[in-house]
Picture (cartoon, rainbow, N blue to C red):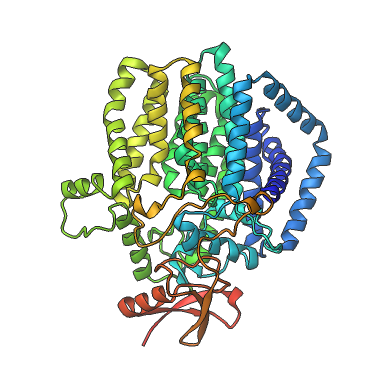
Length: 562
């Protein structure tokens, strides 16, 4: 825990410094503590992303980033003083209940970040994606080695900037830090609600009621956690500024939308939010479009370049605009395997062939345990929300968010209706209904207190998550906090570090031991891929990975096996 706390201090200082870059570029006036650090994390993401096209995110990168951080600390020293003054003022204004709540979340996040992650995707591609970034940067055709590696969320790029791979302890704790700074914003808005009585502030404060679920995403760099939370901030700002907006707040909404999209491309439907605001307030915003347009094109360019390097496709996993003919292009068969697997995961890997739409829906709504429960709750919210809105709110901005949520679900249904892809709407719907019926801050605080107590469950008993999710072939379970974790965190993988050296058509790679699951790799040294996966794809698709040259850093391609 102590080492993680030191790393959090480093992340805090870095995001504090880098936060001024976007704020100065777009002349954003917000002095809010949480928003400033989110912009700082976005700035670091873009810097790391651009750097990874040319170099590894190694000790040299860390030296350069630390130098920029120190320079910004000095150059913006007056503004930093203002930031701390605002933070101190907010903290001192909090009631003892809020201070205790924030400290409780701080300790819970610190403790959870110190234990072994239990998220399946951490073993299948999170760890390996970050290792590739730290050791090589972006590598051509990496999707040919393991199709999951082709995803490389910007959140993993950001985690790679805070992993310190050259130290004995590799950190995996970005999500814990993010939860804390977001929690501060929630308590801040709840405090202000006491005097303003604005319902959207009560809503954003109530988001922490979802902590018993969110806590399972803390100890791995899951892109889902920032999506769950940043989306709520985006919805809050959309509601707050729907009828009246200025350039500064519009840019803030645009930046948060872009950040969400590059963290998880499945949130791309949210680009409708800044577009709606722009159309509604065109006369006010039309004179300041150059910077936003140029910046948006720049980020889209980074996204397209990343896709091309990793897969050979501009819009991976979509194969539209397939205009490039590079030798590292991922075969269509592998992309189809990825799509089918991702879609089937939403249905508990049931046999879906020849099912009608109605039968698919029944299979989805009755899928395995936790997934089926979440699906049923979401559908109930989707059905009843507009009626409750009509009788309890009638706020136009909230209904627009509902319509976009329905559109998002339709798109998710087409590609993969996994609950993770629409949970943030479920959180929004549930919390809106909650504040419509309970418009008192004390009631929300009570619900939050119950949630904080429930978040202790993973520390009191080991939960075998495979009993509650679709990943039934693994032994994924939560890890209990140990005495030694007070100083040093557990290893950031639930898998054994043991591996076997394999060879396929002259290509040497490392594979986890036979007890591992098909897609999992864990913390095996590069280049790593599961031999079960190689054998399956070779048998059924006649495809094997191969190096483009003898240098791993030059990338991978796929060959037709004999």
